[in-house]
Image 1 (cartoon, one colour):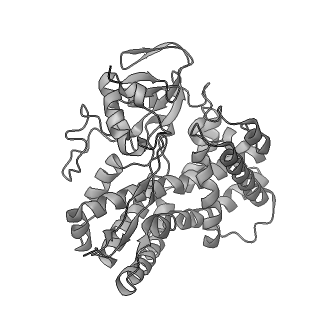
Image 2 (tube, rainbow, N blue to C red; image 1 turned 30 degrees about the vertical axis):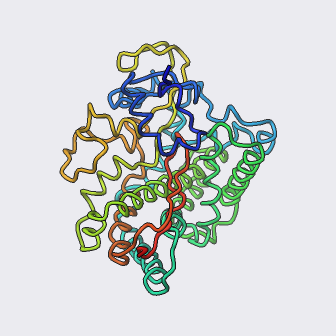
Length: 413
């Protein structure tokens, strides 16, 4: 008897990265919502079903019974509590009224005006990074890892500027941020769990020192505004709430862009027509929207059912943990014609669910687009002959899709 996608869906399998979209397609074809033993959750994969769940926080709370850290060992929990501030006060996993209190100050931080004010410096950063890649590849004949040299440099630097942190701090908190994702994947070895929780504890201490300490080293930005607001009473968040909220937005405000940028660059380097068009000066905007749909880094987030209910016609029991698969919804053929292809003239409705939907819609969309557009403009122009020169390594993970090794250089003869 042949196995089904429900049986084969295992994020810890080495083959999962290569098979994830085929598996999600099979799950979606079976039912818009189906229980998957490999993750111990109901996978919600249809476009209409995902939109329904994200749009109704009363039936499908973000802060419900599901705990993404329930699998962690006692050794890891001893390092940092699973209900500590960095896990308890995340905008993406809380419901109103706490969600509204955490989200309001961050919405102002990512306003169109604030993001637009960064445009020139983000473009300059992208051009500088692209120039450094070009020098190594075209002048010195070296191969480079675009994940490390581009994707892990621009987004952390940009979020530093938003928050008023010195850009030299970017590598430090960016390394801590990777632990947020690692901890949510079942099967992580105990030693790796302990190290990740150690990173989380250090991240907490780093942000707490800012919240409670001297602000003289900070530029004007989100951190200074919120910390001063808490001190003068205009921000009503407690110390723990502010620490957890700031750390999570520092993480999510750049890590998702890192992943999307990595996936985008791999696709562009494999599709030479698009790369050549960008190198010749094509407007990246139409292509960017398609890449955001098809190559989003956020594969899925979590919800639960407040009571027994139906999801797009499928009966789901009360208290059921849900994996809400944005990546699957964005390739649903019932919503998007030829969903696995990049179509520059694709209609703008229905709207892809890359950024979520409803009360938890991503507040950082403008900032992410700004950085992705800057890289799509700068790198192909600086390195028109850049090619992949080795195997791309993609992490097997049902939460985030990231290409963590992108070897690029001159095309081999």
